[in-house]
Length: 335
Ligand code: WQD
Image 1: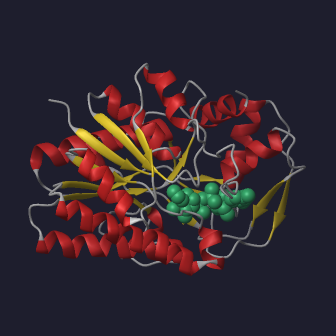
Image 2: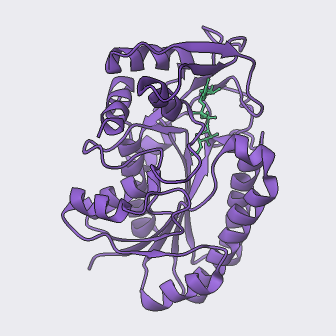
């Protein structure tokens, strides 16, 4: 019997890659997405990769009747919750949008999940719940805080789930803390930056792609005065297909054990902005002009994962390195 899995935000960058990995692992994934940050043809792109249809429904988590309808029409064994606004900079400017979309949306979803007795839930969290880390690499037991409204909504989501799990012990919750997802499926069909009208993500990789494709004259490097080897920000970049595989392993563990977990999904390695630029220049054979400007509000100096629990509990270890991450992003950007 194949497990039917609802992917809220399943047409997005991480959702679509996870959809492909889930189907390859024998699950039956289903997309619920408002397509505010996803290309409309993503289900067709997924289908051309997998050779199977990618079932989907357009809907918004702020429309509770839409959530009810999709649960009334389908018998889900689990939910993986990706649907959330995720821009740090945008959240600083529009915190209320993030509180409504990410927190109220989660509450609406959890109320419907309770009504339809779905017992397994995976929450897309983020390393931003560590705020400014006290030690590196960062273990899951590190002190939690937030440095911006986006990180606040992720921390609130985790805390709500902890309280709900106490009240509903039959609900098994997996919390996955992503570090910096980059790269693309080898087909080049699933992108980090949607082609549509969504605001382009302000993340490093999409910005480097814009320069390499001549859409911007130079890359803005936010600060070179951090306490890092070359002064620029250090992050744990993880290939999106590794991240997607981490979701499959998490879901399999939750379904088999009935025990919840909170796990970092990273590589355990930190790379600086200048290292990323050099790697991307090598891969793209493009000269990546950049300008150093002051630090960006909400940024921290260094962030990379302690990945020992992911390996011990899930057998997860990232397989792709920086070259493959940059090469797959560059490949997809040229499709
Ligand atoms: C990486 C580094 C920037 C753009 C955020 C969220 C995280 C996740 C990923 C959702 C930093 C520098 C960036 C640019 C730059 N979000 N940079 N010039 O902020 O580490 O993480 O996105 O899944 O939860 O917190 O990612 O790619 O924006 O920045 O110099 O044009 O690149 O200062 O050091 P970030 P990022």
